[in-house]
Image (cartoon, rainbow, N blue to C red):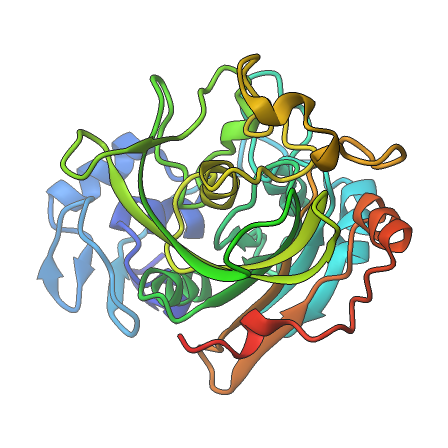
Length: 349
């Protein structure tokens, strides 16, 4: 048996050498890997390296002769039920990515006591190399709508950079209590997380799945953990003074941003269990003019309606999600037309 030279692929960009070996040669023990790296038997483009060295596409990795036993653990079973459910959520798909229509009530990522979540379900759609799709961003458990998933690590990194550089344009629809004034506006506030709440903007965990996390709160500039947040909104339609259909465009991506912003301007999103509750001394609590009509389901009326962003391979990705069933019933009850002109869509960036 002789040494071999393997080339790093685009999808392996930025991967640590030890994780690269784990991916390519899962039967190789970490102790043996450490030994062959330490003794210089592993080289990258002819140079000695460490196990923590980050790899770049096109680099050549020299792998010494290895006597590898078959993997001791069997491959995980793929859930056909999860695969079928995910395929039914797909709004758009190409060789690089998928855009899913996340349903109400499905957590994006797991947490304490959370048995089913979308991140876990993605393991049911591995590629030919056994790699699973990767979440690019996240939505709260009770928020419905467009969710972007990359099929490779490289594509996830490219799409993540597009989100971080704010090239992605997101439009949300919400039904809120009362009618905001003015009809179109900009909400600019500092938000801080409550005790025990982590920053969940990257696709790492679902705060709604934890159950013990506090609300985001309006904070002052300079306060510890306070982060600036900006949302543009516009009223699309309304029902007297009772409620309004808002189109919302977040410029920043803070935890629970739209829900916290809606509450901060005095018009919480209908059905929000965390931000829709009013204190006993709040005059809005018993205001008959703002009473939610009977028949409206007490589920969060927030939809990630549309996602627009440049595709890493060229062109634009523009995907729209339909209303979830509970919002569809509310729209029908109030006579709202989804084809109605949405002022926020053509608003300047």
